[in-house]
Amino acid sequence: MLHRKLKSQYIIEQNDMELKPEILAKVKIFILAGPQDRFTEEEFEVLKSFVDNGGSLWVLLGEGGENEFNTNVNFFLEQYGIYINSDNVIRPHYYKNFHPKECSIGGGVVCESMWRHILKQPADKVDYDFSDEKYKLHFQYPYGSTLNVSDPANVLLTTGPVVYPFNRPLAGYYCNEAKGKILAIGSGYMFHDKYLTSYKTNDVILEYILKLLATNDIQFNHLDFNDVELNDNKTFTDIGFIADLPKACLIDSIGSEIPADFKKMFDMSLCSLSNRLLKDVINTYQQLNVKYEPLKIIKPQFEIPLPALQLATFPPIFSEPAAPPLELYDLDEIFSPPRSQLANMTGQCLQALQSSKNPRKPPNLKELENYIKECARITAIINEQHDMSPREILNVVAHQIVTYRPYE
Image 1 (cartoon, helix red, strand yellow):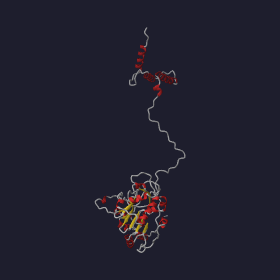
Image 2 (cartoon, one colour):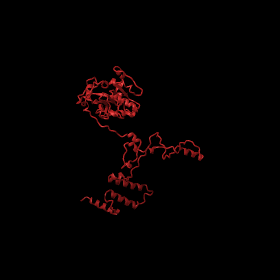
Image 3 (spheres, helix red, strand yellow):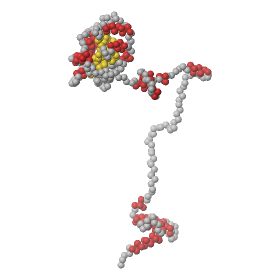
Image 4 (cartoon, helix red, strand yellow):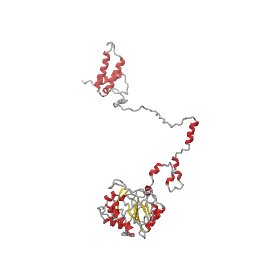
């Protein structure tokens, strides 16, 4: 689609040869769309002469910058205050596109005359009353990187306050007195067919850029770049690289100067494996008359302290816990009334006498004394702490019976 759009207005030619002055002599716009090779010093001189003579140069890269595309185009752009970083632009949360690197940027057109012109065109706009109308514009910036822009160049597009890193340049523009122009954008994918057909703002930005580079109808002034909010470029630690090369302690570095490249602080030799003694080791086999053959794996034998576990067919039966070691009590003896206890005691004694072989044999005096004492204990005549003889117990009982005699 981009080719058809350009072909309708311009004559398009593709150059695969080395850059020479005669090639760019009849060219108005020279586009470097994702160069994947390094330029020579002579080619940079040709580009510099092309811009100084009023030509327009358009540079497009993508995520990763120079490192990803294996080019040195920044060496040329730095002369004009433009540098394409080797980073990525990411949308922190989901919005429209599925991939986080397909960024939908709002408020990223910071050149005032540019966003006022785009607002008049059929672009994608947000129906919301913003304090600054430039936030109504949304354009797609997929798989791109940020730029560093300084004088004499100016910023046309930024990441805005939503896309990370925040408020970083995306497009740098330079124009000299001879109307020679350089435009560098960190993403060439924003003019892919997918984004030109689905998003009108990208199509409008493309037409604006072509008009800016091909003609002199668009002129900027210092007021167009007054309200540009930019944040400093911040670098973060390469956590993945440091995790692969751990250092046990950094105490030795106290008091010493830390190098500018922090990667030099890691000792790579600690993880190296030298084969310089391999030849001597092989010769030792011959000296010892040992056959040289690859080492065999020795299967280790582990001592298992417990047998292997097996699934039980039936659930295990656990034994009931033992009874608690409590003192035994005769509940009948404790809770029965005194009359029942006396009857049980008398019945036991009579049963013992009846079961004897000689019923006429006189009772044992010792058993009789125990019977009297037990009856006295049941009837509370004596306490368990006091020990009285059977005669004294009978005396106490006789005195109590006498007191019950009726008066005449």
